Length: 327
Image 1 (tube, rainbow, N blue to C red):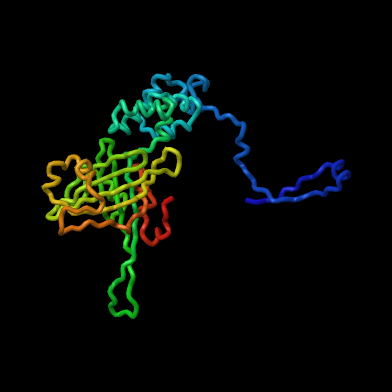
Image 2 (tube, rainbow, N blue to C red):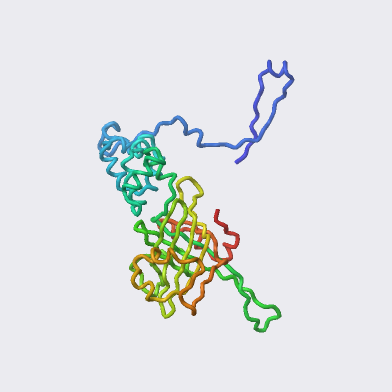
């Protein structure tokens, strides 16, 4: 509610400077009246004083530092970042290097412990938290989603003009610390696909597994589409983030499909990337399936945590997502 508030000016000032009384429009802020008021706990029934028990808002002060550290050690890194904003004590406790060392060694376990320690000392000045925030990494607590659309002309039936359809489909990638990833190309929304993106997915779900390797901020991935005419899909992506340490964007640089003979990869299905890393980009091993370098459907991947798959904006229908452009 807006109201007119009149501010009188002292007579001395008005006489000397000639200022007149001014009126301005201000907004009432009732919550300002709460400043300076200390909220005290209500004593339980039967108690004569509220000092017999601790305030519920200061419950964490009753916990010893050892117990508080044990609680934080069981929390994921991104939950630790949120907890560090609660109070000063939690922030200092979460700065413990042991918490971030465990997170770093798990995130880059494919590099090995010795290599991680070498990078820690040579690049990040021995700070595990600095390494976690600045070193590019793939996130394993959600899905990377690429939303792509194209226009398809329909068939004219009893109309003067041809109908036009907007086709929307998604690419989904889920990474694992072991160097494996799951890939799915579907028109289903995020909340539906998140339920089947696991190694236990059936063939009906059309979830394919592959191998990836990360060098600094570049990711090389390869997977095999099985069938009568096996097709190898190779992609190159670049990791980036909208904020420091977010790693929530993937730029799809190249996407190539190549025909292969199944007996070429039958001995290396556990490490497809290691078998094809020496192949040329447009090299094909099956004349029936030529190599194709795709130029369409190269929208960036947006990271969606598992806790936000139900409420993500990517679940909106096509008519409300025409102008969605990931940053």
